Length: 265
Image (cartoon, rainbow, N blue to C red):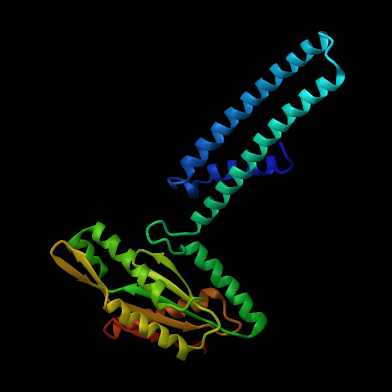
């Protein structure tokens, strides 16, 4: 195999053995592909052995040295081509698996793990540059009643529609993802509270205009949002905690609104 194949095989084995990917839609395909590739490589080895035996017979029949060399070169070229194809295929599949592991399977947005990593990076960037950011926690109001009345399929469809509104309402450099259940998180880099308030107010209004067909009914959604402006020296957990507290205030004040968390004292 080409250099790096052993490391790739080890990486695949770790991914398949990681319980975090159990039930993942690409895990079964990756395992089947890996097994199939192993079988193909075993077949190649057998073909190589047969080819070597044939070369010995050809030598015994006094084939010229140049002819033997040409045959061996063609055989190695075919094997190298197959090996290159295998490496490219596994590399592409590995990239797809890594990408999928950072996405929520229902909405296609970033998942909680990816969002936490983004926030950590933003905290580090803010510490270097001094440019702060805003984190907004978003929760769908009375979402349980949607599931109870119309069923979880409609509830899931509502979350997918909401994810689409998030993508359309936010700025192109904002990041958003599904935090869990009916809760979402938005990261607004290099943004002050006033600008973030404008973006979030627009988002609240866009969600109000969302209409989701459910049989003969139309489901309407509202969201409550809690924002926190990151302060220098603050950990990402502290910023998230203040955003969560602001979300609680938004719900206490009647929902369908945006609240800004109090700064640290």
